[in-house]
Length: 119
Image 1 (cartoon, rainbow, N blue to C red):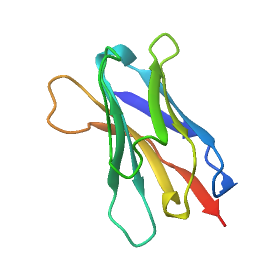
Image 2 (cartoon, rainbow, N blue to C red):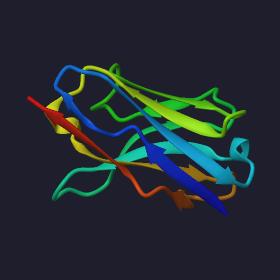
Image 3 (cartoon, rainbow, N blue to C red):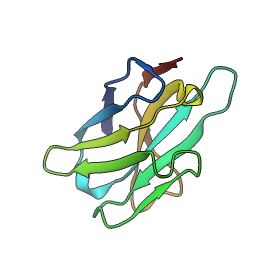
């Protein structure tokens, strides 16, 4: 089992920046690929960014490329999402997720943290 706890979400003005954190506990963090997803009101959950176990590969949704950066600190068991140039449409609940090497999908999810971007 892996427990994931997100933090850092808050109200921020458009154009501003925010850094989300996701702390993992339980099994060895470095064994898991990590990702961020988000879900806006009335919309389906969507992929935001992912980072491989060894940190040598990252992937981003087109809507956040060039603005968001995913990173991880395996020693601290934490994955981050640095969000810059925030837009109104970035408003959502942000979730982190973990996937083992043997899984097709993400096995573990956090409870989410709310990000609200205001004009």
